[in-house]
Length: 83
Image (cartoon, rainbow, N blue to C red; front, side, top):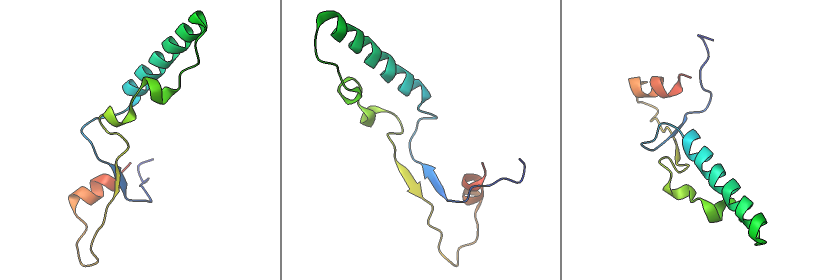
C-alpha cells in the first residue's frame, strides 16, 4: 500500500505514543473491581468510576490541520497525511 494516504487531515495531540497500555490497564482494573463486587455483593462498578480517561497521555485531543490557501504544502503536512 505504498500509494495510500489519509483523506482527512486529523491528527492526535499529546505526548503519548498510544493508548493500548492504558486501555488494557483500565479494563484490568474494571474486571478486578467487578470480581470484588460479585464476591462481596456490592453494586457493579462502571469503567469511568475505575479509570479516568483525562489522565491518559493523549486523552482524546484531536486537531484538524488548517492550511491557508496560499501556504505551500509543508513537510509536516506531508508527514501527517501519510499513513
